[in-house]
Image (cartoon, rainbow, N blue to C red):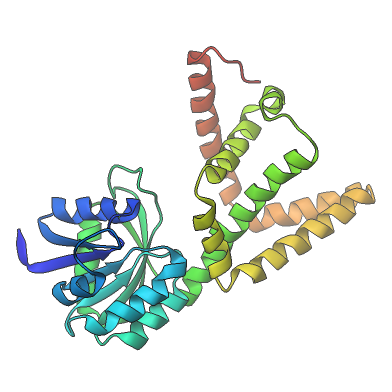
Amino acid sequence: MNPDLIVGIIGGTGLMGRWFERFFTSRGYDVLIASRKTELSIEDCARQSDVVIISVPIDAAIDVIKKTAPLMKRGGLLMDFTSVKKEPVDAMLKYSQCEVVGAHPMFGPGVDSLMNQTVILCPARGSSWLKRIEKIFLQAGAKLKVTTPEYHDKMMSVIQGVIHFSSITISHVLKELDIDIAECQEFSSPVYKLRMDMVGRILNQDGQLYGNIEISNPQTTKALKAYLKTCNRLYNIIDRKDLNEFVKYFNEAADYLGDFKKEAEEYSNYLIQKLVHKKRKKGEILK
């Protein structure tokens, strides 16, 4: 055990909170859990813990930080696991005197371990705890990306904001055109089936969580405006039936991806082969 280190997880009865409770416990740390459902209050959890992790929905994070950050041990560490970093990190700095690190685990509670999973860290105050947290995660096999809260939010505005947005709109297009989902799959090649699997995966999640991810990131609207602008330009090219301009626009996009195109094709081919094999075992036919 590590009696010199107590980890408190506020929001620890949620899926991610439970995941990290198991993670830290398996490494010998004492873990306290506090939420609206526990006897231990979030305030007492903050007072008693050396490391406090805020693992609550984005729209509740600032209020929880205001209540708990001032109670932290001065030599402790305050972290958050929300999908947005600028506002929570600013709040943790404002209301606490301890070290502060914003964090964003880039995986869900369904993974078995941290091996090869990405954890984004945004150091904000102090460095001693950062080194300890990095060591804990690295020893578990995690891939760490250290950046600023602002740059994190810029990247998430695309990785989460635009990708989720496009997936939601694809489903609504199918609805608007009255496309039967099951029949649509019968017309699909493996690569398009894989794309629809990703759409279905996102839309099988919690709408409030994904809404908070879209709405709470201050940089999402800028990214979405750029997305809509490019969609409109491409639509106009197609509407004019301008093949030369289409090829030019297509190649501009391809050139920007550089060598990633080949890597992406190889990786997606691997996934497609896995998908085809799985479908064959189930007796299904994929074109």
